[in-house]
Amino acid sequence: MALMAWTGSDTALDAAARLLIERHHGRLDRQPGVAVFTGAAEALAAAVDWQQHPAATRALVVTVAELEPTSPTTAHALAAIKHLLDGAHHGDILATDVVRLLIPAPTCGTWANEFLPAGRSGGTTVHQLLWRRPDRPQPVTVVVAEDVAIIRAGIVSLLTADGMTVMSEAADYQSVLDTVRASRPRLLITDVRMHPGQGDEGLRAASILRTEQPGLAVLVLSQHVQASAAADLLTGQTSGIGTCSRNGSPPLTSSSGRQGRSPPAAPSSTR
Image 1 (cartoon, rainbow, N blue to C red):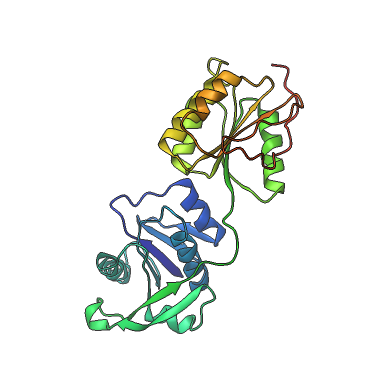
Image 2: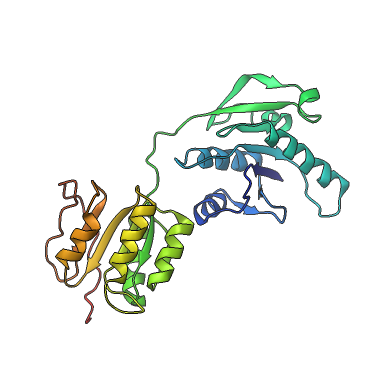
């Protein structure tokens, strides 16, 4: 099996990283900071996708090994991986000699001419992958916040059919905050009125999250657009915010002054 390991004082992963690993047919191992893949090509592709994320701050090592919980071989392999990570820099993708032998011409990058000899890398020759960005747009990752389950399901279905990645769903004020903080999507779609108070919880959550994550785009859904509350959300922002009315009214332009494509309106609510 192929392994991908990463650096960081906190080896726990957010939802986006977990989805990335699953997308490349991998899974988290019992060992912290390690994911297991069916093959070296999948592990290498996952490593490149990981480093392409704007917030990536880790070094990655890809190798081939069998992990058995009580095996001395496992302990040796993990020690060698840790040794490599200790000397790596953020953004690096390092691979052991066996990975380069299995994939001499990777489609996601090229091998550097220089390599780290075995004597300096814990007993194995190590190669650096010079990865490149593919000519494809980054996927649009979304959290959908709506307390009416049937409407939420409809929005998720529409977004998924349009090629977006719905990372999580939320049904109340606190879960909106928790899911967006954990998954860090590119877009939050939220209703204005949510539990527990059925007031402006969706707007307030969006305002807090935009302060914490300035790059977060927000689309607010409401049967009755509340202009004053939307204005508060727009204060101090330059782009990435829009509103969409469920009653068929034209969507408001974003604060950048451009009216982009709006997603189809969800079924009308009786609220």
